[in-house]
Length: 136
Image 1 (cartoon, rainbow, N blue to C red):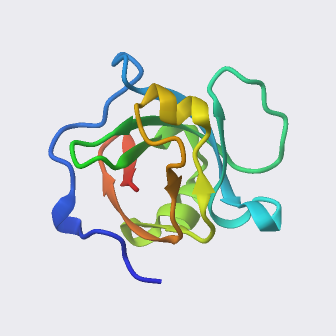
Image 2: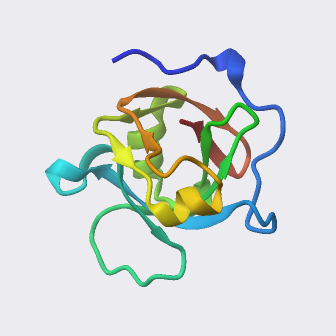
Image 3: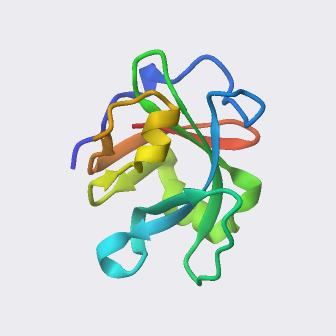
């Protein structure tokens, strides 16, 4: 797999939070869907207020769009255990092993194409004091 984008494309503005009306606060289940959320990547993205009772790693992310038309996930570092931070964001790279189509409710709210998906690949991560930021 090749690295998508480069470290030179790191965003200059800080990650947005739910205070911005164009940002979605969500729960992201990390892992690979075909292996029952084992491995790396994004298994599922669900609403922040939906109750979850699963053993898979779940982290809070703020989802927004970039000026370049990409989707941005700002993963809240305090919402994940250190072992998941190491497993999924080691070397400031985030790997997605399978296509992850975004739900229509997310694409509609962010005014993205209805069929927008996150493609398999290795994506650079931008670390801030609060977030691990990935643009897809």
